[in-house]
Length: 601
Image 1 (spheres, rainbow, N blue to C red):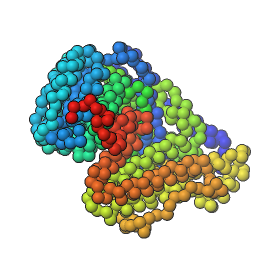
Image 2 (image 1 turned 90 degrees about the vertical axis):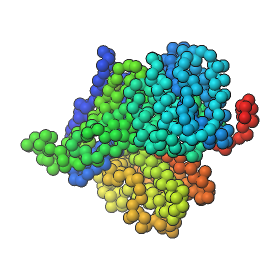
Image 3 (image 1 turned 30 degrees about the horizontal axis):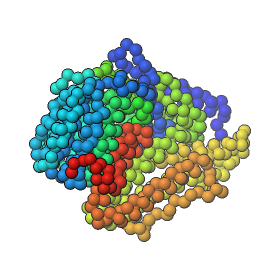
């Protein structure tokens, strides 16, 4: 057992190291407010051994400030509506709801706001050049003229919608809303090409949000355009949700408090690979850059990434003095930095928050357990990146749950893709492979009997009655952290996985609620309940897949829904993407005459 003074010295060393690496904000503005954007960091593991590579999953949570601006004092808006009027928009009253949504948005704009309306089918038409909203009746009459016809020149419509704002002199929020129900079949139709159009204008303060309507559009393209364009993506299953979606987008645009947000990961030499979850990214030299959509007032946006680290590559001579034992001393390994850049308004100067990244390297197993299982709450300090009033245990569990939840959604998405490809034999395998992973995690958080005896012996010589629970918790959290850091979030089921999960006959054992007399730690109980929910989610999906087996529309719906859920997993439950998903969720379509009897059909 570690002596008290040794443990105290280690904890003090760690605290000092973290304090020395507080966040810096660099700005061209004369006054810097450290509390404008608050950033909290959660690590999937805090202490690792020096032998072998480790996958360090890191979650940054960006807290946007609460800024309530009265309607009369808000920034003016320049909005460009880009509306698909291809032939398919005539189906299921899509074009009528699109026109209703445009009119609803129009009524919420002020005379100081500007609006442009661009339509596209096989060609692009500027129905309304960017103009002040001072004659709403005239604009409504123009909207009524939209009639569906022809193909889908999506890229041309997007480019013209952006140009309408870019060529005008305007100070305020600039937003393009792209609505489409189909696949681009004229002009630029690939994902990279279409998203490049949106990304190339982002530095001019123009953000692009996309609305995918129905089941036949490319969610990959619409999501990528929105991500790289700094906006949000909406999946609208039924056209009747369009007015609500447009209203939500307008409200979020008005509430934006951080614009042109991006994250740049600058890794050190010990980092072998960088992976950003849930967002598209690009590599520039040794840096990885991701664009984050605008943040709204009081939003909590998550940004999660993985660093594959090889601790053996760093120069030990730079970290230890000659009188230190390199095999037994711990060292804080500098992993690099994340630069979060943003503007308070589209026209203000850019600001940058620098987030230092590090992990403790220690080959002493007991000390690693103490660090990873540290129960001490770390309070947030203005101007520093801390753990947001969470301890290491809570942070490790939080990161693990996000990864596991995302793996569940990915498994469901892979399975529905196989159903669409009429490859039913692989569907059960995909779900069973993930069930097996869930069961492995359950086994990881269960302490073996011999270790339980050892922990009890350690606690018997301790000074307080709760030490046994604390020691068990440390062991469980450290085991979970090591397991999650040793695994990579895979995009495909491997051939090895396929061997032992080809049918429901090989379905792994079910995870059960841990009986009261076998519970070892409150953390174990919480993780066990979370794993049960993931298991239930897979069971529900399996039942849905049976229902969707011969229903192409249902298959498309589930695929789009699961992808949206996976995106929200990484963005956070209190994020604008979550609001977008809730606003665009659809139920069965009711009678249109009862809902909107005044629409001329």
